[in-house]
Image (spheres, rainbow, N blue to C red):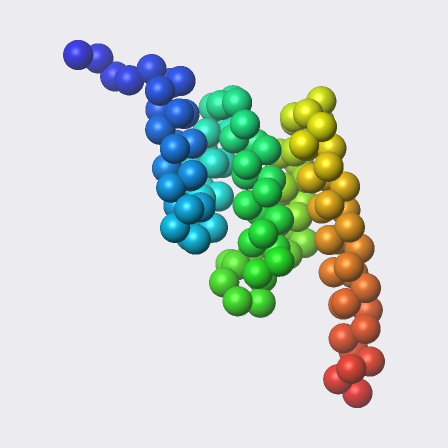
Length: 113
């Protein structure tokens, strides 16, 4: 028996991402969705964009990257599936998150003083 086909490995990565997401481990989910998306597995880039957006929202609690980096990566992945109405909606949502984040950062120095 030979090595599994790339498509089956991508499917397995996607399924692992779904499982991790269901367990609430967004870092793990992002890892597996990223692997599946890199292998051009359908829906993986869209799912990865959602998870990265959620990680950006949780930045203060769990995320290992800055919210800006997470949102930028999410936007990059979603731009690859821009023909999907869901991707367009998520990109719009990510842009709104980036604006809220920038506004919060602009106000923070005033709050500290």
